[in-house]
Amino acid sequence: MAEKIPDKVRINLELPGKLKERIDHVKELSEAESVSEVLRWSLAVYEYLWSEKSKSSEIVIRKKNGKETVLELLPMVLQK
Image (tube, rainbow, N blue to C red; front, side):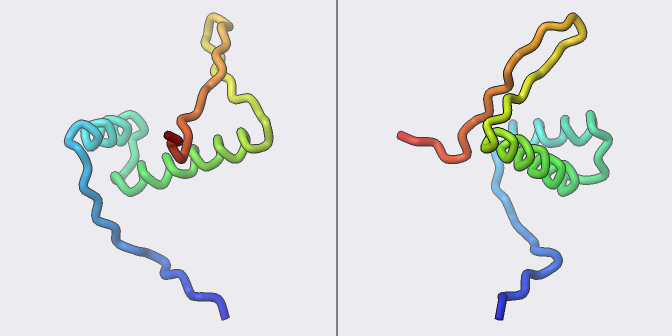
C-alpha cells in the first residue's frame, strides 16, 4: 500500500538575508500573496524548464528588439 502524502507540510528554512530579500522582491513583482506562493510558482517554472530541457528543447528569451538569447539552466546537482 502506498504511503499517504499529507496535503500540507510545514518546512522551516534558514536562508541568507540577501536571498530572503530576493524572494520578497519577486513577491512584490509578481503580486503574489505570500512567500509560499512565490516558492510554489518558482518550483513549478523551474520544474517545467528542466522537463523541457530533458526533451532536448531549447529555451529562448526573445527581447522586444528581436534579439534572442538561449537560457542556460543552472544544474540541479553541481558536479565537482
